[in-house]
Length: 79
Image 1: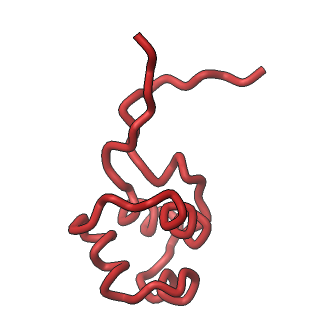
Image 2 (image 1 turned 60 degrees about the vertical axis):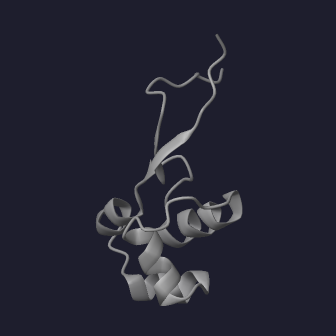
């Protein structure tokens, strides 16, 4: 059976605390509205396209992989 990576839950709120980033910081860094950011942070809107996910990851200072809880724990190691 092939493994297919799927994001399970966004970790925006958790990462904001970890990286000391506020809602206001995200508004300024992403150009998204405060309401839209609050929807993502509060979990009301958890489905985001890859572009939005990259925007959040860049604004927080994390990798896109860190932005989610993934369905697989192990990762393939690149040699």
